Amino acid sequence: MTAVTINQKFRAVAAARADEPPSEAVLKAAEMFGIGLDETYEVTLYDGLAIDVRPGDVIFVTGPSGSGKSVLLARLAEALAAAWPETPQVNLAAVGLPADRRVIDLVRPPLARALRTLGTAGLADAFLLLRTPQELSDGQRYRLRLALAIEKCGVQSEECGVNSQGQGRKSAEADSGSPFTPHSSLITHHSVVLLADEFCSTLDRLCARAVAYRVRRMASREGVTVLAASAHDDLLEDLAPDVLVIKHEAQRVEVLYADPARRETTP
Image (tube, rainbow, N blue to C red; front, side, top):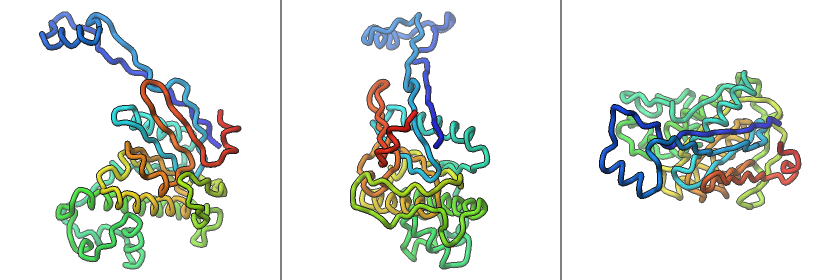
């Protein structure tokens, strides 16, 4: 296991500058909320938040918009980069889409393999394969970026010794139907980390659940560690995270583990 501790503070009000007198709107807003303009307020988002992260985990961070999910995801990724220096990280937000190439040309051949990769992200419409990214909807482009990120994860997994028979991988087949079901903890190697902020947020909710289910199966099959965040909590049943982090208001955070035994070993 990797014990990760997250601390994050930021200044909510910048120190006043003598050469920039506050406007009338600033003065009224400060008066309304009782904020002194000559003071600097420090807000604590996370103070010693401890999370047990293991290779192959699916970690899902949820909570209201603006509660600090993206910050937590970024700090988790940084902590894992330090703890697992040889483990590549694939950030979905950094995946580019060439505007002048057709979808099917963006995925590695052979065709059967490319179709499996696109299908994992819910791109099964044959007509979409012959279009360019600029001809797709926002939701379709998101799924295409996800497919390309998943492909990169698959390439890295093979390079890190994950064999085609699935030896040493988790099994995604045992599913009791629970929205928070523990998965077998057989993964001991560090293959790749997939970082997905605003996970499936732009998709219609039925499609989002289908994609979440496919990502769960992919992660279990390939041993990919997934760090995902979304304000939508309707993905829990299909994504079946190993670690669920619920960010509430202020500093209140819940960390729930699918495997109850892990609660006893949490730092």
